[in-house]
Image 1 (cartoon, one colour):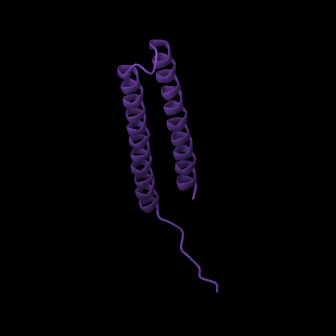
Image 2 (cartoon, one colour; image 1 turned 120 degrees about the horizontal axis):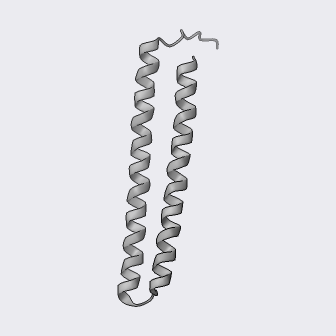
Image 3 (cartoon, helix red, strand yellow; image 1 turned 90 degrees about the vertical axis):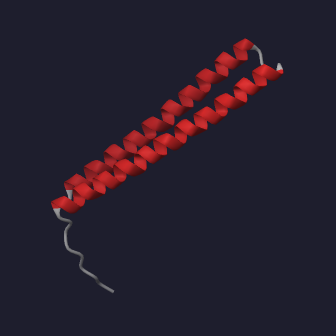
Length: 88
């Protein structure tokens, strides 16, 4: 089955870029919420006495590094999708 589709208008492409930005922001918020949950678990372990201060600092750095890495992935994907949408 062959179904020809018309090219997207400039307005529609800009609209799709806005949708992509919104979805990316939701992804960033989700990653930040995961970071907060992880930090709560680390602080709870510290208050229970199961983690030392050094462990807490190391885990906080690891959680932040993971957060930064995944936010950067979201940014990279968004940049690629924006480029694709604007190139049409």
